[in-house]
Image 1 (cartoon, rainbow, N blue to C red):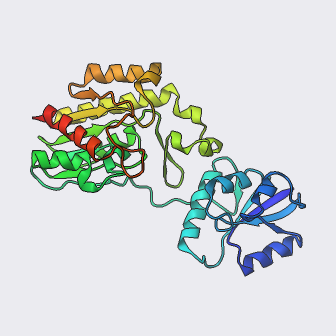
Image 2 (cartoon, one colour; image 1 turned 45 degrees about the horizontal axis):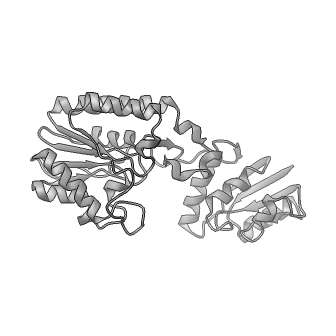
Image 3 (tube, rainbow, N blue to C red; image 1 turned 90 degrees about the horizontal axis):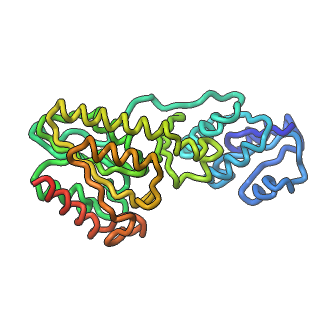
Length: 318
């Protein structure tokens, strides 16, 4: 049987490993490929590794762990780096979804919903929600469409947007905040197949995490009809919430990051139909990922595209 010890490769830990098995072997960045291909000369007994030994590579760490019959967590008396302790906790939390780990129970930070921003004034204000296309990936903060439209409307603004998040998470950001009468809430919808998965901390899953996360949360789970039904339910809650408060709700998308209109399946089309039918201020912009320009990362909207979003929304809000 193969046993893997996970912790920190320090003198005390090594002494413990070799007391159990004089031929204990470490798995490092320079021999991990040989291990995964079954080329190491040791096939039984004790192995050990750490996130530092694998250069913080989550994919390699998961692949190594899933090759063992038994995994044992052996934390050091003192971690050399706080980041190593944090990464080890994070990575083992993921492994624990599929493998039992001895001497380890899932480690969590205090479970509480964190708001990305809060109210700025008692007067009517603007709220911006969305993913990386709204949180300003690839452009400066003062170039993002939310900032531009706040300047045009001369209103204070709070940014709830967060990179990688899905619609349901962003709707929760709105519902849990101090929204008031006569506020304006603008939600830029992101791809439908996104899911916030809690395992010690929230993992915001989308297509970009695959095939890596296939070992933890299979991709076909993201495309289940159940995910879309719960998304529609979130939209209904959002509409009810804003209606009761007399808050103006505007939603728009172009779904240019995860998919294009030509690639939409039956469930996405059903969601679009629901939005067009039930929301007075829902707008579908058919950029299909062909933005006017791109930000510094070459993937997200650039300054001209953010300006176009702001101009379009300003006309709808005048």
